[in-house]
Image (cartoon, rainbow, N blue to C red; front, top):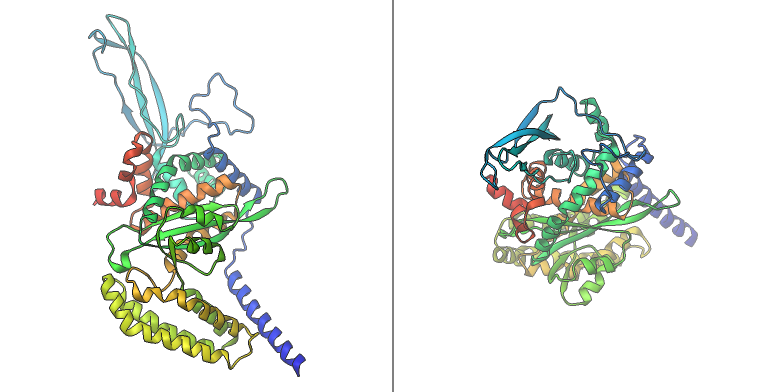
Length: 483
């Protein structure tokens, strides 16, 4: 009899695991990706961010390395916008009239939604008729020094890779169909250098996130190429989200991403070293050091509790799991009423309607635990729920808190979609570039800002922008100016 019971529990466990694996694999792409292309793409992005030299615009007189793609002339049939930068008609030194000696022409490939154009920056070289001094207007600052791409093209490449999840080798093929020869390694160099240029802006977003009274935290695995053996190791991307819109907070929402090579608890401790407040998170033990410090108070996630019962209901049709889901739905019904209300209104509503439901749910779960096998998957789900209840209760007393950590989980969706396409990052530097891009793109999205338009605006200005006025380039400031 004991053997039969043990086998039944094992079968139940295996069925539950099989159902979970099927859900994870559902919809997995059958497309075979070029692993070498992806590995090189990420390695070159990391090298560019670290400051590796890029091909110059005027390489005459110097031999290019064989492993670098040779730059070809831009197609003559592309439309060209010409900008003439003249130093003036009179010599700034003696006042004599200037006469033209020649000119320098710099061509910059730009991308406008749906088409390419070439910006021609013409700078005449003039000589003074009196003192024979030669003058020429300086070349304006550009996102990549001596590089060919305009800010709109760089923004398009970043958004295509990190928002539309299109790896660079695919983008290269798309550009080729348009008659533009842009090698994958060239695009990787652009992405790395753009990330390095935009990193201070991502750090400014991180400071904004850590200034809030409550944040949402989560992490997700990401494969990283392991040097030497051709295999991958599991790295992590972390996100910290500030979103006060549900309780009518006036601060704009933002998402800050960080990349680490493993999941050690020292990483979130370093990320949040100067943060004081509430943190919505799952039960990851690596956060415990933050809670012990007294600076951060934990808020558990009802969505994680509910998900375990949903998995059991879908795999086994458990009646108890179904009833747990129904009772939890009552709590979310209260939250639907509380959304968009002031903190004090949310507290009154939760105290009156949500607290009795939560108390009843906890007592009911404790009663069910005595009626089922302690080794079953259902018992594990109930014990997990009961262990998280006390950490969830602060949301009843504080109107700035939420019932779950869904804000952070939503912020992880772009990463989950992206890794299905580019599969892994080539190095730690490539992972950090991805975290910077996700920070900028997701924060723009949270503020209702077109990330490509905003990044075009930023990349055209950031090289000359004072670091002390960096906040002027943040997406919500851009939105206000555009409006």
